Image (spheres, rainbow, N blue to C red):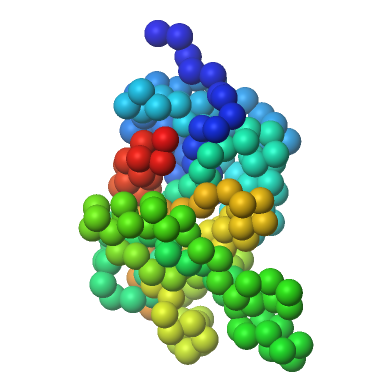
Length: 232
């Protein structure tokens, strides 16, 4: 079978960790060899007759923003997905639950002395939206939907109470989603983050994360590919 090649207008899935990248590849039908464009290490895969690029970009806001910018400028995707794992800030989804962001907030932003609300920066939106049609598809597929928080901090019992006070509506925490959302908003590109819950941020998050992230990453990958097929 010939390997698929990338064409403008196809979705792209951004993953931070190698295990998240591998999880997407594992649930695809086929994939071409890895290529590199600047900070992007990506492969084009095929699933259900649809060609999708999947990239590994590294952890944190800077890596996420660099890779998203490179992806949009060079690969011209129709939709950008951020796929991986996250810590739960609410009890509902539980480890292994799949969540989707209706909006995204930067948990590390705090310019209140300059008149901004916590989570926002002067001249920027306080929240960045997920694509409305994909959010509704996710709801219909029984994902938990809500506000996703991200920053360059791994949230655990040391930080949880302050985070909950500052962002009472946030359902999860990760290290990339809001950065990807901000870049996509600037370019007018459709965006959605899909995360599997790997740990309870209020408890022993790091131990749960290390134990569960690979298994949960596969669940997020399956859900993301389902939505990518709908995004087309």
